Length: 258
Ligand SMILES: [Zn+2]
Image (cartoon, rainbow, N blue to C red; front, side):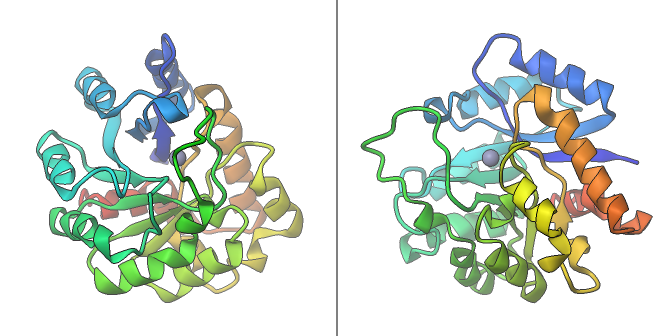
């Protein structure tokens, strides 16, 4: 089965990219959607991603990091013409649904670039005292207005809302253009959800059809997340066709590649 990891970041440490590619080779991950969140997150920036895309054009799908309130719609247009295919947003300076951000979402809709939104409480690996970072700005329900205003724009909820799973799940159920990944660290929110059983949230017949595989962990933990996700899908007898959507079909559809 074709596997695409839709949520990967490129950390700014030596050999990171080659090690990531090796893990992808070892676990049959054909491609990953990769973004750089810059220094605050100990990542490379968008220029670093551009270089990586040149090096591995057949393995990497570029996601441009846009910080709402700092970056502009022009940055999205420029990124598109430089080969980026999707957008990753996090740590906005105001709530995601603030009307001043609408030009960003409008550009993304016009360019048919899906947007991966960080949602839920955010972990910043560096000191960021003056950055006005608020997880409230990244509540999944902030995507409601964006989803309604831009019906042709596809939105991906990162981390299933972390602790706002109820809201993330109902958005998946009610909104055609909202999807979610289940990405997160091995000992994080996924443990709580799996202990309870994810069916508590993904309870309706086609619920798993709105899930997109993504890891959002360092390269050495990707295999564990992949294994946990496969185990979860088998536990709930998710049919092969739906699994195909989760592991590649949905993200390829959103990228306009199938
Ligand atoms: Zn992320």
